Image (tube, rainbow, N blue to C red; front, top):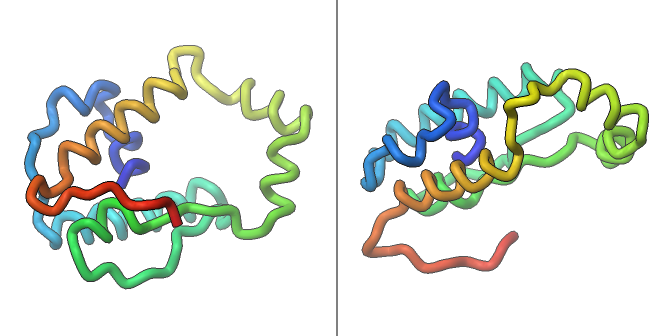
Length: 121
């Protein structure tokens, strides 16, 4: 869900999003949309975990994005790949802000009555 937030047009989405839990149908739609977009944008090098969510918490927090193969990660960490990626990035893109914005917005979507932090998978 954090990737969905980062993909929004508004770079300060956290301030405009309501502090309420979207319906499971809306969350499912957002998750499917982002699975497709990540696959296309990464040319298949990234993949979402293949889990079947059975709760809103699962839809918000259970999915994980990972490299299709370890060599992709190794390649992207090379100086040549880092240089190439930096040349493609916009100077206005603030990685730290995007992470904070995404985590904050997802936290605002979390159900209040069932919110209990979980250990990472």
